[in-house]
Length: 103
Image (cartoon, rainbow, N blue to C red; front, side, top):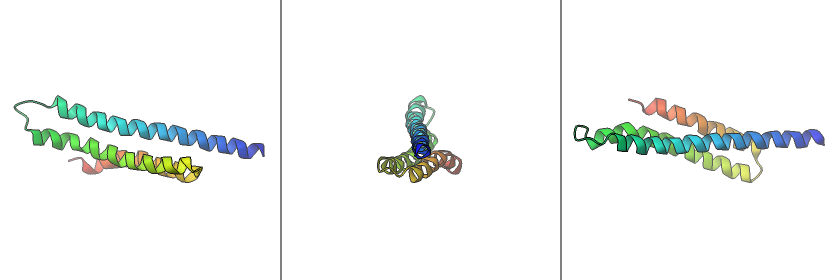
């Protein structure tokens, strides 16, 4: 019985760490979007170019946020293994989207 409780606590901590990581990635993506958008305000740089540069961060944060939301739902319904899988996929999706949409 003690081993089951230890395993549940370990899964719970893994979920908490992954939730924190996904939340950090989502927030940093949005911050990068707005920071890039406002840093590149210049008469020499067209608005469409600054949007094209910063758009990738918004897409990455959006995909990570969707995965985070799905992982949170499973975490709240005590489906820890599924939550861990979804939260890991959400963290990897941030990097994958950055690689795919980079021009």
